[in-house]
Structure formats: C-alpha cells, structure tokens
Length: 535
Image 1 (cartoon, helix red, strand yellow):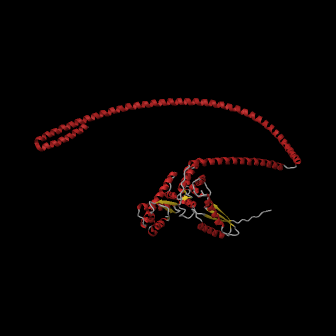
Image 2 (cartoon, one colour):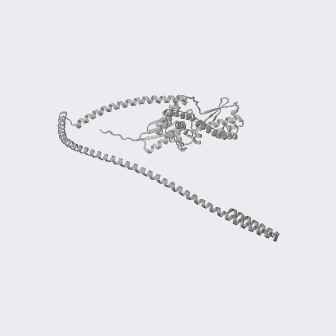
Image 3 (cartoon, helix red, strand yellow):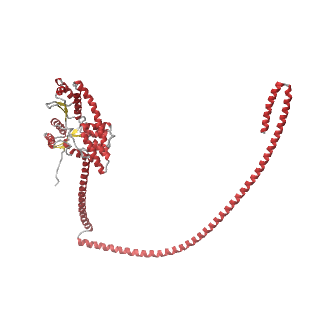
C-alpha cells in the first residue's frame, strides 16, 4: 500500500511537471504525457493487487498461529486442573485420617471420664461419712468449750478474791510499769544520741569552718576616712587656697570634702566620710597640681570630669568583682551598685573585698555540705549591696538590699539571704545560714576591722544610756552591733499612743548625740501582762 501511495504521489508530481512541459512545448509534449499517465495507472493497479495478496497471506498465517496457541493454552489449563484435583484429594485423605484419630481420642477420653465419675461417687460417700463424724466431734468440742469458759470464769473470780483487784486494774498496773520502764530507756537513749550527734556535728562544723578559713586566708588593708595628697613644695598650698580662699571653698563646695591645710610640710589632707567624694577630690587636686592652673572654673571642670571617670571606675570595679566571684551575668545596675562598695568601708574594712570574701567562703562551705555552690557565692557576694546606697535611700542596708534584689529578679534564696543575714527575718534555706556564718567569719577575723573594743563597747553603752534616759523605760538593749536599739517600757506609765512619740524622741536624741555609720533601728515594745495563781 505504501508503494502504491508513493507511486501515486510521484505520478501527481509527474503530471504537474508534464503539465508544465506541455504548457511550454504544447502539442509535442501532450502525447508523451498521456502515455506516461497510462503507464502510471497500470503500475498502480499492479501494485494494489500485489499488496492485497500479501495482506491475505499474512491474515491466514495469523489465524493459523492463533488456533495453535489456543490449543496450547487449553492443554496447559487441563494439566493444571488435574494437578489441583490430585492435591485436593490428598488433603481430603489426610483430613479424613486426622478425624479418625480425633474420634479415637475422644472415645478414649469418654471412657476415662466414666472411670473418674465412678471414683468421685465413691469419694463423695466417704466424705459424707467423715462429715457426719466431724459434726459429732464439733458438738462434743462445743460442749467442752462451754465447760472451759465456765471454769475460767470461776478461776477469775477466785483470783480477784485472792488479789483484791479486778483484771482491768491489774492490766493498768502492768501497762503503767512497762510504760515507765520504756519511757526511761527511750529518754536515756535519746539523750545519748543527741549528745553523740551534737559532738559529731560540732566537730564536723569546726572542721568545715577551719578548712574554709584556711583556704580563704588573706591580708587586710585598713582604710581610713582621710586621704593624704603630697605637694611638690609648700608654695603650692597658697595656690590651692587662692585669693581670699576662693579656690579651697570652691573645691570643698563641689566635692563635699574638707580640705585641711596645716603646718605639715608638703601635705594636704582630704577628710570626709564618703570615700567616693573623697576619691573625686583627690583626683581633682592631683590634676590641679599637675596642671598648675588653679582657679574656680578649672576646679569645676575637673570635678565634673572626674565624676564621669569615677562612674567608669565604679563599673570596672563591679565587673572585676563579679568576674572574680563567678557571677558575670549580674544586671548592669547591680554591677554598678557593687562597684560603689569599693569606696565604702565598715569599721575600716573595704566592703567590696568583704563581699567577695563572703561569697567565696559561702561557696566553699556550700561545696562541703553538698549545696549549690554558684548560688551560695552569688548570695554571699550580694548580701551587703544595700550599703552602697544606704546614705542616699531611707532604711537599713538589709531592707535596701532586699528591695533591690527583688526589683532585679534575683533568685528567692538570694533575696532571703540578704534579708536574713543579720537576723531580721528567719532564714529559709541552708545557703542563707551559710552566708550569715561566712559574713561573721569575714568580719571577725583578726585585722579585718580596726575598731577597738573600747570604742565599740562605749558606742553600745551610749546608745543604751540615751534610750534609758527617758521616763517610763524599763530596759533597753543594743542589738546587731549597734544597728538596733530595742526598748521595753513600763505599761502602767507609757500608753500605746505615747509609744510612737517615745520612739521619735529616742531617734532624735540618737541623731543629735551620736556618730555612727548607716542607720539605727529604734524599736519600742509595750507589753501588759496579767498574772494570777490558782490555789
């Protein structure tokens, strides 16, 4: 068919070409074209006949192959059916054999059950006879129990007649005697155990404290409330004073520090209770001496510059201490507060170094007892942070420190440690107790604080004398190293309304007559008791 199609296509092409040639050559080419057309048609007819013959041949061969394949498939299906039938027969025979075996087993089991049934019937008869005999014995036993109970009652009555007391009274005597013996034995053992525990705990506590103190042994540098500035020559004193004292007055008014210029050669003394102000004054005076230009405007400029420099130094001191104690994640405001303690002293002891030491001691003690070392170091480090601002904010350093710890979201154990390290509130954790012990160790070490015993006792005595100088006071006690005065009044002489007035009067007299660091808490207590005796 393809050949026929191709031939027709070529014929058409030839016709087109012939037509073109006929158009050119006209009559001469017309006859040749007709002849060519006739030949092409004859060829096409021949090719179509051949194609039809080939197609019939292919169709016949395909039909023959299909019939042969169908016969093969039919044979294969019959063979598979035969095999499947044989397998089913085999399975049926095996199942039939199993059913026969199962039937035999069931028959054997039925005969066995029959034998067991006969045995049970005989046993039931034997049990019935035994039950009858047990019933007879039970009746006999019940009769004997009745007789025994009657005999026991008679015996009890006879014993009560002989002993002249009832069974309840005898039981009470025996129990009382036994309880007394056991109570005495338990008490003696408890006392022995308490004594042993106390001895061991005291020994263990002393060992832990000794190890902690030995590991934290260090030197102390006593700090004073005055600072000495050396001059290149005595002529500089006049320039520091200035015309009509204007330079020294400007320096004192801007820094709040007394500048003492006396006959001591080449020395100027700066005196003031605030170490930060004193340090700013020292830095300003040394800068003026080095610069040589000493006049009020220059003094004001340097004071302001050194205040900014002091803020940077305070932050650096706080960061260094926090890094040393292992608490680098402190809030920036707390770091600055702790840095201020570098310029705060308590009886000559640098409070920042004291805080670092308390933190380290608390960490060592916590490690010995299996507590959280990092939390103990942090709590010990922050326990006195209220001292940095107790001159600027109303309240004791404990109250201020507790408030700031809560404000900056410190751990509850840290907050309670700050609040309880002087006994104002009860400690709620072992770490709070350890920090209080570490604080006492750091403060009580030889050389840590330079206040003499005489001055310390005198201050406490003066505090109590001021309190007892008012009328109606029964007793007064100076507590917490002079940080609190507790006054007991006579309830028949001082009323409830007068208690508040008395507290204010005592506060005013303390402020006017005593010099002391920090704050003193005045507590007035009025208690009325009624006692009687019943006779």
